[in-house]
Length: 64
Picture 1 (cartoon, rainbow, N blue to C red):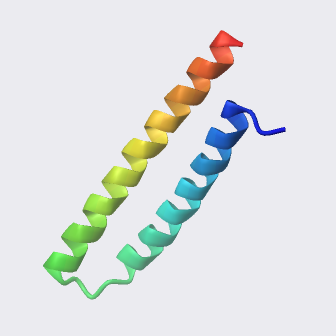
Picture 2 (picture 1 turned 180 degrees about the horizontal axis):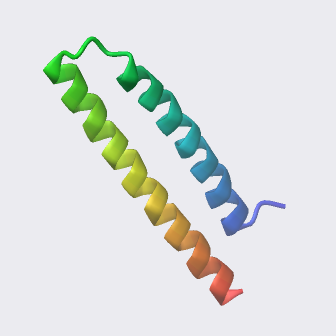
């Protein structure tokens, strides 16, 4: 059964996987500033989204 926590955990796992892949791509860029800045911005956004989801999971766990 899909609970709100299990759904958020699944989404969080996908974000972690996508972040890892993007970090790998970032480490292999040719140093072009525009590309580096765009990837760095995406990484920051993914990290912030991950933090929000983890906060939601903690809140849901506390309320159950």
